[in-house]
Length: 472
Image (cartoon, rainbow, N blue to C red):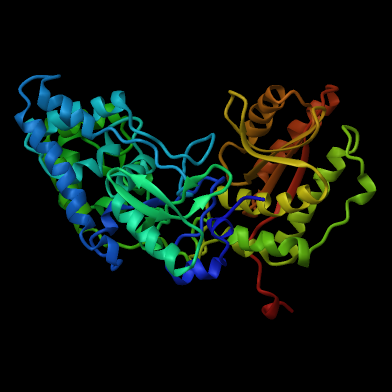
């Protein structure tokens, strides 16, 4: 099973929650990130001066940029050095495809950031907030790296916070030297690395300067700015945010007042941490549900032992059908929607499936791999037993625009990469319209007629239902 921070510290999840600590996983990437804009409103003792520390760090970089007269002079090299950040492991916030170690900013990416900041500085943009928004215009920079960058700069704050919480919880600790200081920190027995605890009050799900569709939450669609963008490039601000990063960088360099306006609005936007209660991304609730699944919804698969290449598909189909039954008959459809009634990201049902499938797989000596990557992109799940018994599982909403191509091209590619012709395409129906589902079914029938091995199609009704108390 995935290991939570609470498991490693040998405390309850409630204990961590009471302390305001994020009880994440060390072996599953989270889509939450440390949001530097929340530093200004936090009430955590160890972070009271963190905003000033963060701003000073980048103000110092900007001063070095200002003093630099030529690329690679001593000021330039020092600025580039300060923009390099090592990975901070064991925070349960990793975003990498292959693990939860985080994302470093090396010399190459630091150099690109520095070149951009230098050009913006010459254009009159000298606000340290640009480093929080650099993902707008610099390829390779996203919420993950901004988060890791923030933790790296404030590692002493996070270490002091972790040291205090661990002491209050009476967790096992060791002395670790971080930079120039020694801290008593909890650690993971598996790798003997220290654990850094993350306050929930500093976490967010809004990818600052990463997702063009979310930029309105940064800019708030100022009417004056919209008119300015229309005047400059003839399109709306929303369309401008969908420009390639290189073009957006060119726009900001040519019209720095637009970026200044964006920075102003970014600073003025309401600060709000992630809503852990409603969990709009589905990042938290799945783990709690999976712990209950094996007890409240047991499933006997003993008649299929030993698991072989001949019966593994039946076993995985039973797990998928159990997942479908929980969605359709036990109210789990609720966990596909946020408190506003909108669908959560497709990752939410994938995590739900992972949670219950892991329980049943462990009970039956099956290996469940999530987001495996064989060089052709990430497959949702692979269930296997030994080398020959493998089943690939791909999960998609019926409203996913790639639902047909996912069946026709994506899943067969994964199957070839994983060297198996056994797979399941699990479709969660999220609206009445069945056209796309029927198109997939029609493709499957044609492939069967042509004598091809066709993925099993399982359809789960994930549409919102009337609650049991209101049903007649």
